Length: 423
Image 1 (cartoon, rainbow, N blue to C red):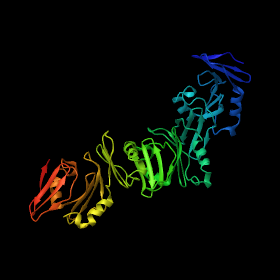
Image 2: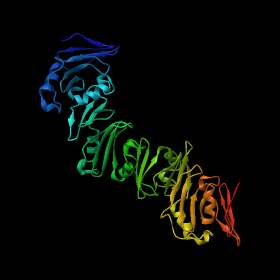
Image 3: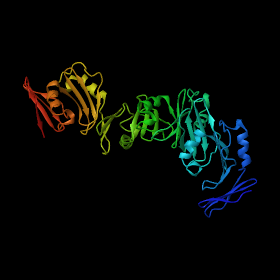
Image 4: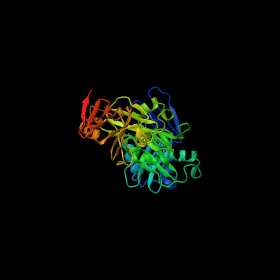
């Protein structure tokens, strides 16, 4: 039916019933059904595609040779039709713009492998190496490694509308982002996100934290695993991995943990260790970050390994406040309604202000400091200075008081200002 057509080391020849192709020394392979007639059939059948092809720009289909396989292609005013071993399918001009930029059939996407389908808001088409999709009125984006029906497959596996996800409440959305392109759709009880990492469900409980962390456009990026149910004496919950960290959801709430923090959390036993489940989001000051867990805090600065401080908690601060025998400090009423999580190169911890002083909780322990001590402590840089965190109880004699810190001490004669002594 035609002479051989070669591009580089790839050659294709058309026959009455299809094409034969080879690249280099590989054995020729056949693609039955590839023909000008197949292209004409798709063009003549408006029900076979959402694409309005219009008039032919190329008078006849062109034979194409490529390492991705041989086939035929023909351009029309409203799009193209490609015929290959993957089938014969029309692609709109919107799809074709992205397809061309992605290398056409010679790129990672390969040949079209499915019909271009559209919902009320978006369109998507399958290719051998992924898909291309677009929101109506916007440019199409290549979705390399993303199956066009990935969300539908996961939804069906979840039991459809009668399953755990419930019915769809949003349209399929095509997402273009520096973190990677993909597809998302909202359901009554969660979302499905499909990227090159796969298609995964994120429940509504985790979605709240995921959204607060910037969604897939934030530090977490796209999901990389399904949610896993965790049963443990520390409590039951759900955990899910993302490109940039994890979200853990338990009775304590749903909180994101970065990949850096996760390295220390895993070594500390994860949810099954002494730290238990997260109870706060990460707090960062400069290069220092701290996250609170049920049993303590994890902290790191820069590229240093995260370190844990077991026992640091709001409960530890409340215990010191409630026990007047634990300190010479009359704390009085709370000025800060809850303790604040603090990140610092001196280590992470918690601090809470009261009318009569402060309570600090860190790896050095949980101790109250009077307002007199706090005045000198603040001038010395607070816990961010050379003194670091409080490391002992403030004790008083009849005439004076003193308190130990990681890097020295603060003392004062009653009725006079406190002074700092560094080690």
